[in-house]
Figure (cartoon, rainbow, N blue to C red):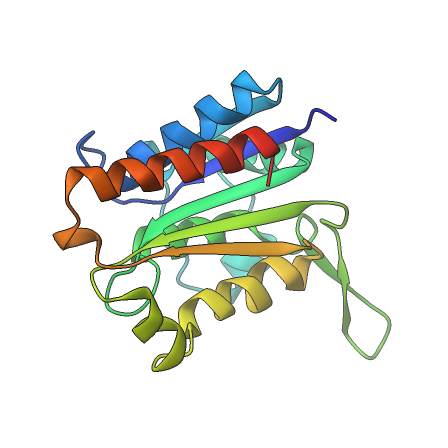
Length: 195
């Protein structure tokens, strides 16, 4: 069954030679070839401010670009988030994007006196694709995938998105073209399956 897929390319460097951009294109190509409807957000191309006050997060009207991103997220069945691991986490630009987009009344809302969050993005699934210089096994076992789990639990799942699957690509800085090509093929296959 065809899905509406939104790819969020979270690499802060817009230069085309960044591997995350190639992975994003591979997923897109696979998904379109399989008949899925695909939209993309390239975070490095957006202009938005960093939120500094809780009042901005809770009640300020987002910019037109952020409202368009919210519309694309609302319309999607499946989200694909790609980013490189920087200092153990997602780059600050991508975190700033999530803070702008996943606001109250869009991604979640509080109901009742107990302030239990109501998840407003139910019915969507997600795939997170992370690249890193360290071995993926070290990230998973020693660092316990802390930043990946934070995005899964504290952002996506908190807003009702599930299931959430992850692909971790380690040692990317030292990977030769054959290994990079194998990963591009795997990601293209995931795109074709809409997973």
